[in-house]
Length: 229
Image (cartoon, rainbow, N blue to C red; front, side):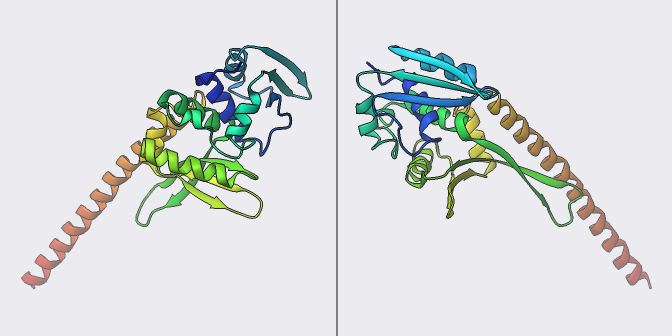
């Protein structure tokens, strides 16, 4: 029997964000690239679910298959993977594990570059994005939970081909890191990028302040020269 614990929460989150429905109502199937950075973590968690677990490798992918008597209950609770499972909503540890599975599975760290007027440095703003081809309902639920439970602001962008959930604000990304809603090595990369951005802003702010100070001094000298004339 599958127990509603953190391991199941993580695996369901990992699977759900990749798939719009279950292929088999009597088993959980998960396919991961052999080079996926969280492969060992996935392997450890899915094996701790118990019952029968098989693992096969083909064409650069690792396929996991686990069967249990109550998998249909989990699928019914999520309406065949369309909604967040209820068993993660009443327990904060399970909720964190579920969201960690989501971001570990499909969370993509991206950078957007902007040049601010009067700035000497191009600014690289880090963000994290999760894409789901048919999961707009699921992503909408995750956006609400992130805000209500962790005060993390995420935006949902629905296109004809897919739905995209993005977290752009730096303070929300820090909350994602500090609440351990993403695992290493992605968490380390995100934290490093946020620190680098903060350092650049501090340097650039000092540079702009110095330029403004010099401009005021120059204006003062010009006014003094005009008065003396």
